[in-house]
Length: 246
Length: 193
Image 1 (cartoon, rainbow over the protein chains, first blue to last red):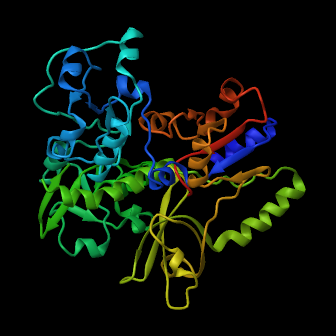
Image 2 (image 1 turned 90 degrees about the vertical axis):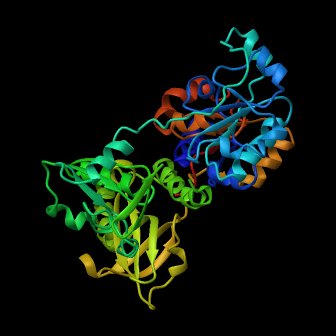
Image 3 (image 1 turned 180 degrees about the vertical axis):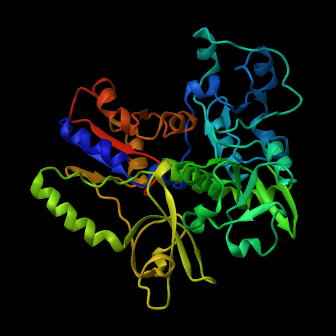
């Protein structure tokens, strides 16, 4: 909706107003990096990486940061969360953070960003710091969205016997390889036509292959007066044997 | 856990995230009675049209799924297509499209598919990413404005950009935009849907 703001700016009297329709995705596609805000570095649910030397890091670093030098980063992929939606923010000296961003992106990480925070300035501004060696392990836990169901709760419900409905909104083609035994199947684009077949007094837990379509379907259900949450996880089925993981 | 498998799946999740933050086109709001009559005619004409983001296309089932409406109001609809459908190449996943169709309910058949191009408001023009990169490198003074919701802005934006989410424009623009009205402003958001 950048066009809307651009139109408002013209009305306010601005004479040189451009719209970059390609947006942030187009910017990234052009090989450019994105920068995380200071607030995100302070409060976000992120994996923060300090690229400086261990000596600099141990003397003081931004709280929660892990120390991985740029030259080691190439070999550190497996230390990062398997969930590639984990936001990874990198900071360091000179151009290191931009280089590191490229490496992280090459792993398939979709939410990498560079922080332009200069540690000396950060410290001088009175921001909190931590000292000492880097933690052994990178631990990152996704925070559930408002209408998301936790993986464990979904797995339990999928075992059947409870009072929740499991709804699989993948296409009929995808179902060909199998589906959860307890699940009802209604392809996402057929949902509106099948609403009358679903109960309003039971909670409907929706899944697909990753969570994208499940989120849409769950929103459609709630708008139609149903109780529903959705699962953001990978679901792979071979018959009724399904692997569900983040 | 298999990383390569995840890598293949993630673009799907990302596309969904884009859906939630994309640049929706607002239809111009018509005012006045004469305009209202026009709008009624226009609405009638648009009955057999679906506008939105292509969610998927099944060549086997010969169907196209399109997400119509924004955010919480979004509904995924399905139309069939056949060899007579024009512009089937525009039914590409993730692209914004306009589908004209005949028939009703389950028998809706796409006749013409066109790409949905963003309309630029009067007095503005488009800037491509490459032009923006060149402009930044030239050191030209300008103000970059990220129009996405603030959580999206905070997790990663074009370096140097400020954030004015669309609903906050009227309130924040007087504080955040430059006093000099001749300085170039570049607005952007989550992509062209």
